[in-house]
Amino acid sequence: MESKSWFFDELAHAGREHLETRYAAAYDRKAATDAAEEVALLRDLGLTDRSTLVDLGAGTGTLALAIAPHCRRVIAVDVSGAMLDVLKAKATQVEVANVECVQAGFLSYRHRGDPVEFLYSRNALHHLPDFWKALALERAANILKPGGILRLRDLVFSFDPSEADDVIEDWLADAPEHPDEGWTRTELEGHLRQEHSTFSWLLEPMLERAGFEIREASYDSARIYAGYICVKTAR
Image (cartoon, rainbow, N blue to C red):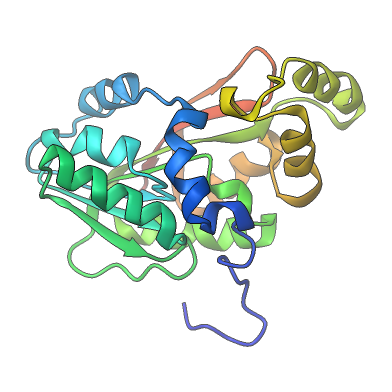
């Protein structure tokens, strides 16, 4: 997509802390993400040593580095140079050579080469308002081969607006007190005010309109997080 004066600036809206070297260096400890289940799922969905996967919003590369031994090529895309620097250092340390880092976002990544078999994104799409989510999902679909898989996980609210006070307060009440243990109540409140998590009943029609068939949708018990397995339909 050609950038215009009214175009959304993903770098400016990425959350200033994500651009800081110190925050990026400590991110893995804070996030405490284990990619093993996601790797197993992607392999069950058909990922092989001939596959290419694009990780949109790759961060410090937890998924990218875990999936790399199981596929031909991984393209790790993130707007934060600080996050990608951590990813590159980790890749060197574990001697992974098939992960390519690209500093870009959902709206600015320009894919070169053949369409790919897999797209992955975890907890990154919520940085975009809904208008831009819709455009980003259409761009994502264009990266995939027909029949290709999008695995999407994010903060997606599966409750009605009338339930927001109770559901959100329950979620915030479970937040850890110390930032080293995860995202605190103060940080989550900032997410709600400044970022763009949306409702499942808004996001799911966006996915379908972008050219995806939702094969599986799952929602956590708190109704804050959702995961999707989507297949690009032939259009």
